[in-house]
Image 1 (cartoon, rainbow, N blue to C red):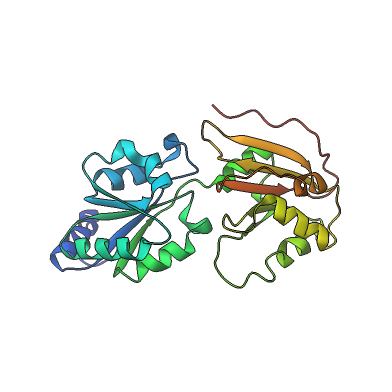
Image 2 (tube, rainbow, N blue to C red):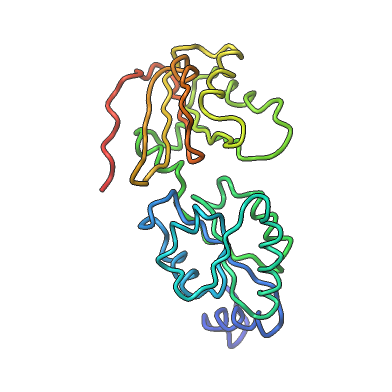
Length: 257
């Protein structure tokens, strides 16, 4: 808390407002949650309602449409995100309030998007959200204290992507929660890779798709059974590998609400 004479909490709001006058490039990043609009935080809603410009991938923007009546909306794709962010930077320089939206919680799997935003802003305000990781744990009945989280949402050398989950699964001390990589490494392929690495074939596995949405799907079985699945998985998938002697078939906890 600042201790300078004359400082009041209102000074912080005035400082934020003065960014525009000083031509400071300030962008807000709002995490919209796992998909259910009711899980968008109040801080996130406030930022969207006050925005002049809102950008994000179309599926993400669809979650927050009810709060975008006053804002210019700019959908983007993986191919044109640099051009859309460049446009946003220009609008911010003109004094527009810009919000970039991302799935889930921005501290879980939005690292690359955050890096792109930070290259175009002097200050970046982060509004965290509820992650599908939290929802998956609630659905499974496990806690973070007993789990390891691994994300494959990265574009880099993919040669050793499964080394880390293999280590923790074989160690058997904690459950492993994993976000697959939508463009080339999804649940069936991950299961096959783990089997090739020597992981036991009767390992209990849960796969959740499109958590909190109306068409949410859940699957449970063994690692071997997961590797044999031929159906396509949603890009919004999350896997849980259960440690120890947890039985494969136990009732899925009822949905909240």
